[in-house]
Length: 367
Image (cartoon, rainbow, N blue to C red):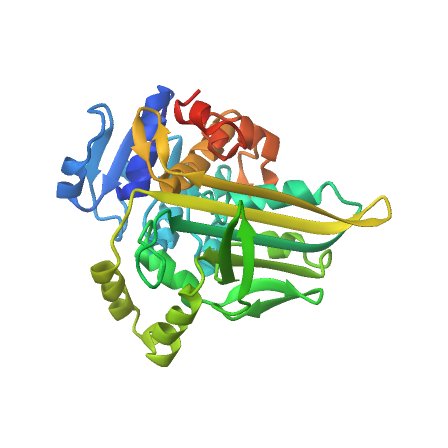
């Protein structure tokens, strides 16, 4: 078995540990600073649990002789964890959507003999893999649009939203500048702008700019596209309320207060859905053409337990990439972009199949 260490024992980190242990192919260590949280987790005894303050300098012994370290920690800790992985000489994977910390990971990857693979979740992550695959089908490219929503299936408040993942990550996406290509030029646009209406499988959503979802696509497609953007999908009306909170009440300047409001007032839910719409237009055989990948992935049973949609898509994404790395099917050294991963190989993987457009009943049984 390949030894792997997962840093962060929140909902996603614990799910990653459960998924990898279930395969029988990985010896899993789960690390978190909260010993009580580790003790409360309903996980197999064979998953080793280690209490360690991962915000501090990680001791070399923690990552010694590991095949890989997977960060499911808050994005603010990405730099330190990646640095520890580099010093230990182990493969590094993370889920961060934060643009600045990903640049630091890339710098650490220069000349490395192990792989540094950031942004292995849903967005960035799977949507980058899908968009790159669609783009390969064209003679020339015009636009690339990525839309993703992690939403409650049964919204009951004015925001139409429940907490389904990291509150800090959510706030960061709503505030930080967003990379894009506009009129053929790589640029930065404001978060919460670009409001549009769209539909997926008969449901109407709104979408607006948020930070981090494009991963490295802007760099990859600079000079090749007229338009490239990423927008988060929500139920109609969400953006207007968020603009009151962020701009009019100036809570963008007081993130800690916004965090407290969200965690106090917005309940979590296990009944959620992840909605994906990736669309690419360009020329094919001399004609303007469009290719679209759309998915609506609900919470469901997987590997013997009920999983939320955000657990399935996020944990499933990084576990699939780890499998492909272990199999030597993606680069094993240096900086690895999500678009370096073949969509067919990803979807054929035992975890990547979560994203397949297949019969949900069969998928839920883990077949």
